[in-house]
Amino acid sequence: MSVLLLGNGINRCEGLSADWKKVAGNVAEVYGIDPGSVDAMDESMTLGYEMLEHLILEKHPKAKAQDILSRIGREVDRISAERGDHSGTLHSALMSLPMETVLTTNYDYSLERALEPGFACSHTTRERTYSLKRFQRAGGKMIYHIHGEAGYPNSISLGFEKYCGALEKLRASIVGSVKNGEKGGSYRLREYFKGELDAPDEWAFKFFSEDIYILGLGLDYSELDLWWLITYRARHLREGRLPVRNRIVFFDLDSGRDRVRNEMLSAFRVGVEQCRGADFREKYLAARRRMAEMMG
Image (cartoon, rainbow, N blue to C red):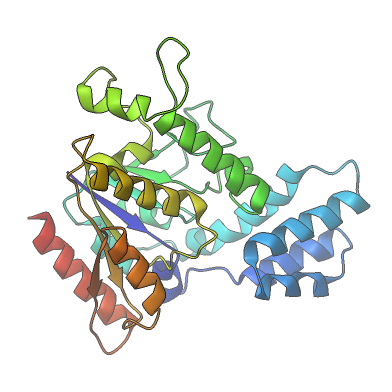
């Protein structure tokens, strides 16, 4: 089985990506916060948002973090919704690949709209704060918004509090035990491979059992959950105690400029494929052709 993991690069290439500083500045103004405070996002988007939320809640004690995230989620998805027709986009081209599962760090529903023009977010789960097993269905595919989605604003991963909380939940889902209250060790993962645990909905298990193709994602080091999965999988490949035999392939659209990241990925047994093309659109299409070959 194949799984596609897409980052925000595809939205930027298609002009569907929100200007984060502008979005954050608009939110700051709504709450009467100096828009200049969002300049911190130039240094760290994760810490910059943490600072903005702190300033807002300190000035407005009755405000809620979810209200801030709701404003951000609506603005991020608005661009995708206003476009309407997503046919002919890179989203449409990639969604035509032969895989049933798509993971994305994006909050908007451009991928779903590329499959179903009239797509509307379905609210069919109680999981609203984190994003371990919630997914949307569109065009016969399961699409997991692993860092949150616009329709569930409280799930949007911005700030270290949410990133660390998400990692804590994710790690417990893989490492924790479902038997006898045992602690430590890869109990759920071991039970999964032994067939003692029904194939769970949690997307993280796919990093150990299905081929993962990563595209349009810079893998910033704040992506704690993804780096933990990559390094934890590498540990099991090294130790050989569990039958981890899947492959993970990272498609590099930057012509190898981030040498350190690529070297780390290779060290952790992630394949790195260079994508050639005159511009980013051509590189995405080249990556799609290569993925089609790999997926068979």
